[in-house]
Amino acid sequence: MFMKKIPNLASQALRSAANVIQRSDHWLGGYFHRTKSMGGNKYAIVATANKMATIYYKMVRNKQEFTPVDLKLYQQNYKHAKIAYLDRELQQLKNQVA
Image (cartoon, rainbow, N blue to C red):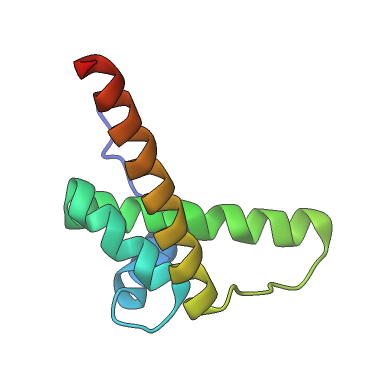
């Protein structure tokens, strides 16, 4: 007999929270927008919910409080990482042409 798969209540709550966080000024909101540009809204919701679940698991396992990253610092680090990535890509293209 086939039984209908019922989603876990915790996963439903995390996906709902991820959907809400897209409208916030939080570093997870920035993560949501970047993943949304890569794979669409459903992809971003699942990816952000997964990140939130990982944060929760680490908090419970290590018995530590959540220390959020400052939004400006997070955006600055992302910008520097993207510039470094584009510089590497440019050097790789220059090496292919030469």
